[in-house]
Length: 369
Image (cartoon, rainbow, N blue to C red; front, side):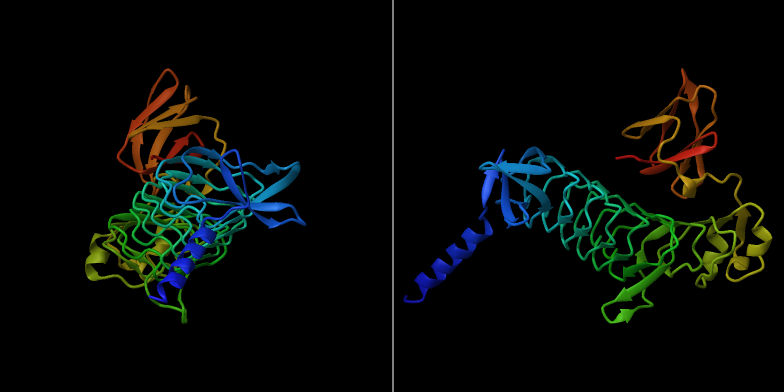
């Protein structure tokens, strides 16, 4: 009996410290990081935030102004009724803050330079993440268990993706944006994902595990592959590939494929390059290899197109197209529909989760979610 009281006191002590905060303003809890610099981070207690939360850039307390520079550990942990969190441009660090919460999307400002492992773990409703342009790594377990995350984009500023970052996610499309830098990826990044995934490979990949560079596979369940113009080496890909679309004018190196792969996989190459591809391994072995009829501009997407796009479920509306040719392509750049224009609006119906809209010479990517 003499040991029970100290153990209970220790548990109470750790429980108290786990939920401690320095002050509270407008229903947001804060911990002071430095009184000299007058900076704070957000904090929270189990499920204490709900609805729409707007984190301010600065907060006043007892006549003093603090700058909010970080979202602290467990701030939104298991918050089941959280609709949205607005993150200000003063935030530079996001710690393990969102695990198990009910958010459906995260818009990360470009001020963020560092994010912690497991920050979105088990966010089962999360469908969309806009990463900061100033982070270099997607850390370990970052989105583990995000079962509603169907479309994953890895921006060109990301240099490394660590183990289990997208473990057990409901991925249908992976977009590795075009870039010249090598992207380092742990061999377990996409383990335990679903099959029938489309992949756009915009950069060369260097696989690694914790013992160093690895020859193991990174990608699993891939059925459709498109390859950006900067790629010189296609990694080994696990999955029943049925199509490969190449935007490289110089044929990239690639692993050997099975006999059935050479017979069944449809390969598309840029206009004017078919003879080059047919002269080198392994591309010369494919039975169904041909040139594209139309380069969609998937790798030259503009952010501000001279037209607007709206979506609702499986329907896509493109406005500002009175005298234009409107085309809809899938994630691999294959034409899937030509819009019917009525009153300057082109309407499409599609089962794709990710499409490219092309109006005359301009293209933009659209995520249906």
